Length: 368
Image (cartoon, rainbow, N blue to C red; front, side, top):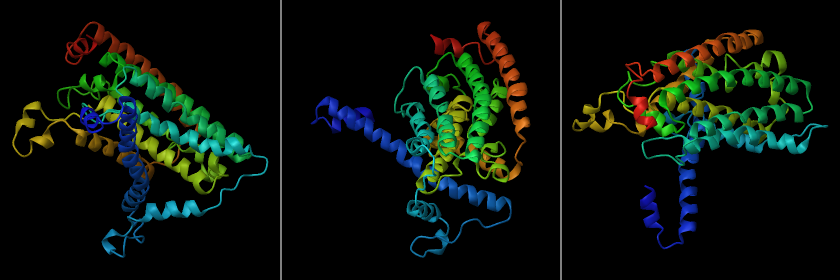
């Protein structure tokens, strides 16, 4: 695809063509992502509505077409938030107050630069992709902390402090889970991590790294402040937490950041543990006529796996009550952290001594 674009823009100087191609790739990632974030809000209300025997949004339509009822809801919500006044509280730090939503949203979007959608479909194929992901996903908490402090509100500040403690706790567990993936794959490159899982559903890392797989995804739910880990927004306790003073587009950006992080964590879980764009079926099925495209590797498998984890986020919110704060801290420090350390030692032993079935040949080929 890159070569095709260079040939198409061959009449331009090479530096200018390179900039235009990079900008085009960014748009091809960000535009579908932002549309997905907007309609994920509708999907959540619909899914939870059906689980609770309700209809969900079904009034806002396009051009009066009844069977499209509800599909215009995210657009209506966006216009409503755009019309609302941005109120800055007395005594608030105006610069930080306005900067906080941007700081919360930007890392969730920038992290997609290294996420591979297919074998050749990635914006930047850097060798330290895993480190890049860890660095960026750790920055999102600063937006929440800055918002709580800059709002000059005790409720907002309390929500920000809760978030700081919770995210730091689960960030450590997520980091150790990714260390297990690094050891198993022998690479920091996300594309090579996917290639290390080549085969079928039984060769993906979810099986040998099953405890790390569960810990990473559950920690991801906590990282995004989603139910049942949404104590930072504990409406019944601290009146919506860190963003209680935000209205209009300031609140909308925090809302978008939460849903963008849901999609990001789901995509990373698919890449790290479920083979990314790889098919769960044996390779010979890709040669079958007509249905071979479906059975073969491709971006459709990545989207399917990502959608599966997004659905689990919604299911959790409809199912589990909010945990107490002491329960959340105990789970992160006394359960997840020891399990990850023990499993890293076990996986390292299997890799070093090349103990089959998973770590006898694949790791050696990727490392070499």
